[in-house]
Length: 178
Image (cartoon, rainbow, N blue to C red):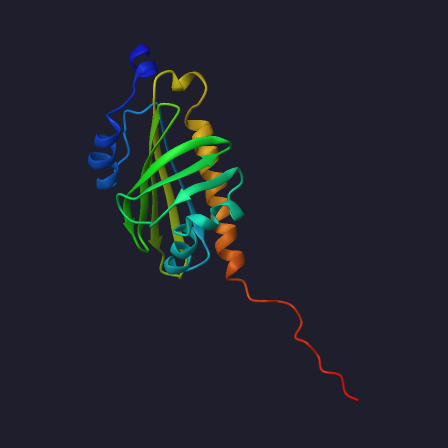
């Protein structure tokens, strides 16, 4: 248990190049979680919303994008989650398939994977997988909290995608007859 309490994981560069870029999280991290949700839209629409990081604050509570350039492998971005500053770098950007990055905050290191799977009926399964490691992490943050954050994020994504594609239900304007 003591080893797990003080585990800090591989260096950020190794975590990025040998884990995230290869579609893996750190299985030895103190907090590892995976959650999935089916969204009622095709992969292309889900990707459009998911890869538009600038729009995330409109549907993901407690999130602020601080600095964002191109969404491409190796590109950095900075953001805040519930007031905590996070420095991240994209590892995998495969349109319609996967968006993965590494991040660091307060000395803790994470790999975040977001994988899209098209379903036969035109819907999309979105899976979020994350590892989070750093000294003393288990004392205040664990898999249960990580999973709850993923489920909130997935729910917000689902709502943003499905609401944006819902048909306009307002009545059509009527022209009055003189």
